[in-house]
Each structure stands twice: as C-alpha cells, then as structure tokens.
Length: 196
Image (cartoon, rainbow, N blue to C red):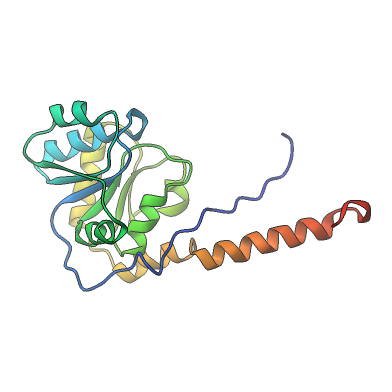
C-alpha cells in the first residue's frame, strides 16, 4: 500500500514451553494441521529415505493420504493437550517444518523447549531459525534436500540454552512491550486533531 509497516511477531508462551531434563530421542516430530500446503508428505518421504522415525501431531483432511504413504516408521498421534505437546517437543531429536509459513508458532515453541528445527528456508523460518545454531535451513523443498537437512541436524551438536535464547525474543512480555510502544509512537506521531 506504499506505506511503511512495522512487523510485530505473534507471542509464544516461552514460560510454558521450556526444556527440562528430558533426554531427546532419535525420532523427528511434525506438529501441524494435515493440509496440503504444510508439505507433511515431504517430511514423511525424507524420514523414510534415511530410515528415521517420525511422529506427527495433528489432524486434517490429508490424514488418510498421508497414512497410506507411510510405513511403520511414521506414527500419527492426533491432537493432544499443551502439556503432552510440550513433552513431544522435548523428546524429539528435531522438529520439522517442511512447508512455508508466514511466521510459524510451532518452530518457536520447539526452540523454547531447547529443540532444533529443520525448516524450509522461506518465510518466517528465516526470521526464527539460525542455520547451524538453532537448527538447519533447507533451501530446496524436495524430500532429498530435506533428508540431507535431517542428516545434518542429526550429526550436529546443538546447545539447548542457545536454542532457547532464540525463542525468548518472541515472548508474550516482549510482544506486549512492542505493541504498547507501537501504539504510543503512532499516537504521538498523529496530528493533534486526530489524537484520542
């Protein structure tokens, strides 16, 4: 609209989503609505190609198609409570984001739990994932490229405190602070006759 915009990212409850002493497993995790644009099929194919276990949290119209293409290394968990979801994040080797998101709450929740993310290097993932620090960015949306990303994250040693620090900038407190500042600055910049 030929107007300058300020982006204020949505908040994530980083106090709730936090690490504990859980030792991560060797499986990968997807948390998503099961719809085509989320590209869950890419995650399934990538995991199958390297013989990795994959757990999928979510429901949606793609469930039957995705089940039909999956072998015994893929587990569909349906929906779950926030407490169970938090534990799924903590137990995963890494969380996968094979589709493009405007922002992506799931990756930030995973980071807040100290878990790395393997994500397509587009959209919001470019603002939340630092390649080699908080996860792995994949520059091609093919299953083979994603499989390479899974191998990279498996072979890399990540520090959960460093990963978590990447999520803290998306905290609820920070969101409220930024919204208040934006509103205050907007009001102060408005002409006198339109101020409330």
